[in-house]
Length: 343
Image (cartoon, rainbow, N blue to C red):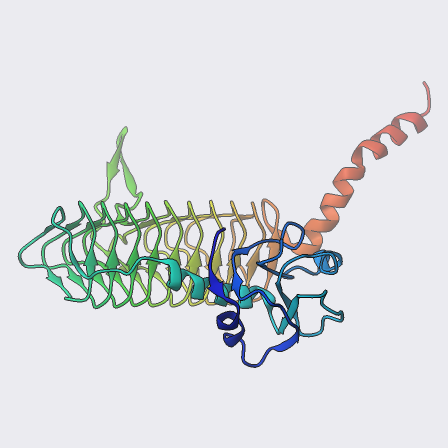
């Protein structure tokens, strides 16, 4: 990454940091990992297992945890902060603001906005996007190119829709929401009733509510409710390629990793963490603070604070013991065959 950011500007971001060492280099020119960093770069120690790489690192500035013991090399600066990973995120946000082109509010000439839609003067509507009847785009919202904003949809202040996002009718998007490229919100729920030999489609007339501070990864799909609302709670973060079924209720500050599938009418309480490729049967309640390991199959309600693994899911320690025993089965069968008395 080629940058040109003043060293002093970076140091000013951390007024409470412990700073040791000095450097004649005035500008940071790149970000790099500890092993590959060169003079003029900034690096960081985010994972303790890479601690041994710090002493040989050539970066001009190294973000380190406050408790790190060591002395910087000549012309090197140690910047000690409570959480280097969060510190790096702060630096990246600062750099992004510096290098990103300014966003000009307004509607691109190729965009189409229905006459009864409301667009804030400070909002941005990108090329070839569509804004439907009675839609409302709030202040400083940024709508990328080729986005679809359906009828009666609301987008809150400072929300960002990256290119190719599709919001269908009656979606309510809160403030400071980020929808990455290809997200679909408000698609028809997967609901059918058996009618003789046919699968009869059930119309879904509800909506989707995405509350403030939610971030949704690329190509994630969130179905609208059969009636009432599918809801994503304040501050929750969804990774790429997640499927949220109709009438699902996601609580506040949940983390859902990629390729998770959540069937209809699941209630997920606050602060739940779900690993990649986990699957949930319908009409379950997942308790507050539960943790679900990757590829787990959830077929029953989960108690608050439980940590589950496996398919079907079991308490984490039980699943770990079973996995260890499974690896021993070939030896066990071999021993049994050897010890079996001959007839």
